[in-house]
Image (cartoon, rainbow, N blue to C red; front, side, top):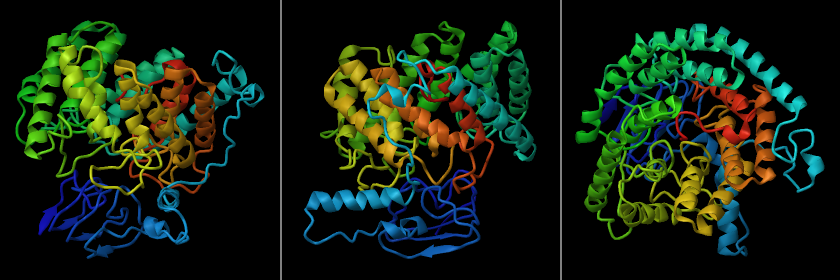
Length: 505
């Protein structure tokens, strides 16, 4: 039996658990996420989660001894009962739609039809929001901010992270200061990041989202804006103390975004971007990217897939595909300007690895959570099209090729149809995070259809709490809760500058 009470594990996880029984009382994570569980029994006594992917199950205990997968109530309606006379691809398509339908609410909005009249109340021909729609967004931001601030009184005082803790709230206030220019937001950010600095994990977690580099990086940027350069430099120096350990690593350090090397890499890129200069020398950044490539090459050989892809990455016994834990998130960073030291290596190693991910596309245009898992269930930033789209757009920008752009546009169509999630309005797995798909597509293509779709998802978010969605574990946090929704609504006020927080660069 494998037993875990760690806050990083739980049966709703991100991957397969082979030939084992997993018992978890953790409120947050677990060794398998959204994938199949072979020859195993998964027992969860948590009052909040189903043993598969972040699905809430209230006041219940779920026990499954299925040799194939853990049964989840949300999947009951995914059984395919199509006509035996349907063609194979039609049966696949109908089954896919029913599976994704179980996790999404019906999109009530009519899609963009090309008629300028359909957008005139939202934005002009240059993509500038109308005063009326901007005012509506601003009013809703103020309303939600009041609710959030009251709710934070019940938040965990020890959670320093960007993902669910006080650094994420500080990052929201930094963003609001940038959008609105109100200095009071800086003071709010200072209050929350000071709290986070006093509660740092002091563990091996070194990433921006879930580790100690998040509070240090956000604090450095905050001190920079407050014109306190000595304190900003002190935070950067503390942050860089992790650099050697991240580069050299250990057998247990992953490469993904939430807990791995690229999660630390983002902290350095965030500082350079916010300071408007290379406070962190490019050599230090390239050393991390080289360590990621060496790790990916080693794992590709270890799993004997080097003839299919030069790079491969593993997190808790699974080869994830999505932005949070997987291949697409890692490759998105490796394709950024200057990350890989030579153009030849970029084309020889990174491009075919990206193409390997592209080949995993499902018939719907969505992407699986893991390599080898062909179930079409998840339309989240963390797993599925809403996260993979950033890799595809960056590949199109770097390598050219219409196929990358076509696949990215298909991601947009998947999100439009299945992106209003029952999980709620958050960033990681909610409507706000999914809406960033449209903002990214709009920024790259200039097509008003994508801005229109983003505005419709904003309308959905502005009706926060009226759709019967689930309440997240941390209802006011940046990545799970209301703070993330506010961040998105504020970003939409300047759509060409909008970027998914703590991820896009």
